[in-house]
Length: 629
Ligand code: DMJ
Image 1 (tube, rainbow, N blue to C red):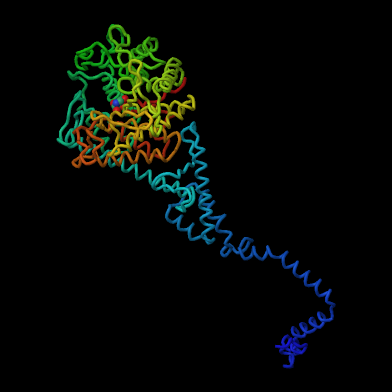
Image 2 (spheres, rainbow, N blue to C red):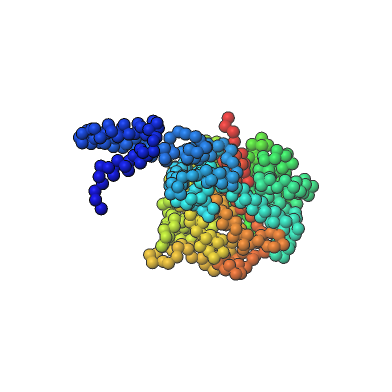
């Protein structure tokens, strides 16, 4: 190969020269340019080449931007319009569109490379997490906050490219909660079917024997369920029950009733149904039962007896003692105070206020913690030395706070007693389990700590959260969250996923499990306390996990306690999923409380029984917070 000659060079660059096309001006211009170029010195040519090179570099971003579509252009073809427009638009919408079409549109509009889409998705998830973490514990109800949890089976998780924008996640969660509410309505209807078919007008359903049991003979389940049906929107069922109240219910009966139980379930149920419906039928019935319960206060000490004959107007303590239970005599106040306000008859409020006044002054408390019994003759605590937040003391603490809230936060003695008691809990009853460090509330028996906790204690997270929401110390909310976790563990650590009545926590190093259950404590009575607390915790934190926990619990009730012919049953053994051993009894509080709190937990409307307007009695019957004068 020889080097190209000048001739060769020319012939290559001007191939068409001999074709007689000089008339072609473009070619002629090229030829003359070439001639001029050749006339330049080597240095001049180099300088020009360098200049051209620099101009090329300077214009590069514009070129690459054009290629990447980052400049303004035709909106149809400009890929830049995809990212900034579609996603924020969806976020901005007040009424988000239905999830399927929205997500499809968004995904089909995403024309960026997959890597970029994923990065965008991660950013969205990260911002959700931040909002969730910032959820304020003390936010007032109704101050809607967009909190999308990353937890949960259907909820998007970190790094997961699922359903996109916060608005879409919000829509998905609201569809989920609607489904869960429907499941609660279904559960209620199923329970009600059993009650209607086999126990109509009686106290409790026995779903297996398809019969009923009587306690007071006053249609306890029906009355306890009235406001639940109203809240769940079960109008037909409500109307049927109302007709029974109007035509069949009479308190003019020669029966002994327990003062506390009939106050919280019957008086409380009638008062709340009156408030929700405005129907005076329920107020009239409430006045009737309220006045018939008053003989219980005719005692030497004014501490009421446990039992009243509502037909004869006589009262007495249990046959074996002259003591009453502390929780019972101190957890009837919300109802009698409200009855006085509605009727303008002061005797009801006066009677229950006297009890509180005496208990406030009594000796024998441990840092504000009360013993379990009080004597109706001398008004003193008896059987001293046992301090618990469980059976026989539980709702004393609950009603200290709730009376204070009901009365507009003015009654300082109630608040003082409550705050002191919570300090007492912290100092004497709070411990951590081993190996996982679950915070639990044990008991003190004659100076000895016992790591025993009743399921009943699981009202406490909800009550603590309610206090914090009403301005009490923020560390009450921290404790509420810890105890909530423990109460949930009491469910999921069991083979049926349902809590036993009582658990014992391991505290020694080297334990392999946190929770032990004695043979005699393995029953589950369909109690509400844990789902009650989940309701409060969700209302105040909007943390989706509390709803998911409630949903699991409902599913386990359906799995292990639902009776096919209608109704739900208490079970004997939460540790045997193959044979949980049904007890053949559906307690009235399953409909009055458990299903109501589950429904409210899944409700997206903070005004459905707003906690700024209502306070729940200990049987889940909402009573109004008194308007301030
Ligand atoms: C209900 O009657 C009330 O919640 C009461 O305060 C405790 N016991 C039952 C539910 O467990």
